[in-house]
Image 1 (tube, rainbow, N blue to C red):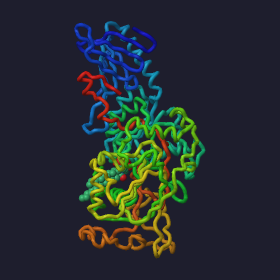
Image 2: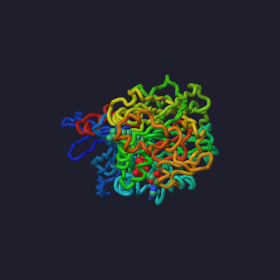
Image 3: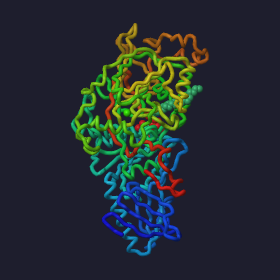
Image 4: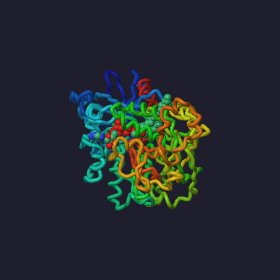
Length: 583
Ligand SMILES: CCCCCCCCCCCCC/C=C/[C@@H](O)[C@H](COP(=O)(O)O)NC(=O)CCCCCCCCCCCCCCC
Ligand SMILES: Nc1ncnc2c1ncn2[C@@H]1O[C@H](COP(=O)(O)OP(=O)(O)O)[C@@H](O)[C@H]1O
Ligand SMILES: [Ca+2]
């Protein structure tokens, strides 16, 4: 039977006989018993077909074609569970179908390819790929060439590949070069590499739109090009939080089928303008200190964070600060509602309508000029002041292999809000409990010294000190600082003399905790504890301490679909057992 995009015929897979049906949206094949009764069906959405080839074809470890003229091979997405309750691994499924004639083989390949084109308009044709050869365990190049490039080739995607030779090369390329013809940009690396792409694409989009990124009140233009992440870094938080697993093949398959996941982005400003953008962690105190310390130990690779985390935990620091935040509408969601933002999240879908009210679909959201910041009436600014172990803002859960539920397990990828986590100064064991809960399902917010707020904007400032009324901003980007400066910053007082902040300012006085706390811990580092920390902005140290950050709802789009609920989706083991694959 043959209609427009429909086709049905008898096929053989190995020695077994099947009835294959293409309905346009779905391709399925049902095993038949000797009396022609249905036995089991395997069903693949056309949107998840990766490619169709004539003959018997293998692509991994290398492409082998045996062009038997009555055989065609279909490649598609196959799921398997990771063992944890969330996140599914995707692998390349491959089935070789034999048919009675070459004419029928040609009909099948023609119809399947036509269905692919019709139902997958969002698939990329051409991609710009940046590989950081030094990210994570330095395997970026190998991961791309052995696991990812063959899949892109199979799917007919052409790629322009650039192996970076210096930091910020990818960002500068995106800002300066003409990107016409590229549907998306792929980074092979970690969160730092993703951040480069993020900055390049956001900057390039605003340049083209004639918008000023330094203006805190401006509604930024969402980026039309998608970003793909092939994880090859140290934390790989953006990949983990948007895909649910750290696996280059899974990520490559999401890119190939043109999945689309909008993502909130925080812009971080100081008085003179934009400092950076952040998606995963904007953290002062502990996370800032861990990053500053870890930069000295880059040679350790990903382990540098565990080492520096332990050192910074043992140094038992807390910092004075004033935090102001603009709460989001509490009726929409809450950081403690124990829900999770999963693929197809209804909170995020409702936010799309709220953030882009004039658009009927995601494609037209780029023309929206709704001001998400100044026209909101969600609430008044709230001010808190005191000493904090850490102050963190994240506009998604920031789950990563170290913390599978993340910094804020109920945060949403694309709801236009961020979660502000305030950890007040506390006993070392209390802080350890807080940290440790990130590794389990126990609620890290259910502690008396922890607060979490769903917010649209946050301001951080230092309290006026007794001797110095005002701190000047720290000059220069962290990239330009030397090692001493990166960690514990010296700043110039108004009188012009250079002085280590540890010796003055609010943090100079020991807290009661430090006076009475564990003498070993205090002996280790407290005597040199600095008065101020630094901001960790997605793995980069910010040049300023006093900042204002604002969440821009759905500013970029990734080739991802959010975390698939492993418990709700049948996996490939089910295919083998003969259940229909439900999507
Ligand atoms: C006791 C165990 C405590 C485990 C605590 C885990 C908290 C993990 C939160 C992770 C948030 C990740 C947010 C992502 C940040 C990334 O953008 C960013 C850049 O990544 P890249 O290098 O791949 O480019 N990564 C980071 O800034 C790294 C932050 C990692 C912090 C890890 C801290 C580990 C702490 C270990 C403490 C051990 C205390 C032991 C005391 C005896
Ligand atoms: N060729 C290069 N040489 C040095 N640094 C680079 C290069 N390419 C990218 N970078 C920088 O390396 C940093 C870390 O990269 P990333 O891929 O995130 O690895 P990791 O997760 O291990 O930190 C990023 O900030 C990025 O700007
Ligand atoms: Ca969010």
